[in-house]
Length: 181
Image (cartoon, rainbow, N blue to C red; front, side, top):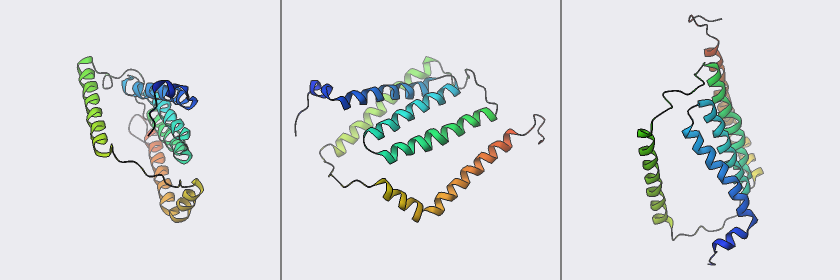
């Protein structure tokens, strides 16, 4: 196995592109969990998920990348924002979301320790094993299986999402006195 130095790593254009994607992704993820405003937290989540999708696309996993864009950014985040708007949730800094440093510092330390334990366990368990190369699956093959074999579960999931959206609208349409329009 060839040893790659840091200088060699920086000479590759793909590594620079990776860094241009990963830093905004990490910033978006960090601001998602540290933001006091829930709407801004959702918008930072869009940045983090967009960067994740870009990394999948850069790795050649087009199906997974576009699934992240369509499902997570295009559906879940938008439904979350609509849910915030129609339930009249507070839009400013919320006392439930805002914690002092007496909670944030131990939580950050616990997160770093937990990440270290998981990383150590993964390296200890799989460090010496090499993944065998395999033939990639075509996106068209995955689409054929999804829409031929699993078309009924796919449609059931769409009806569940539709029912959730209709339920959210029904909750939002209630008058302040508790009656319905």
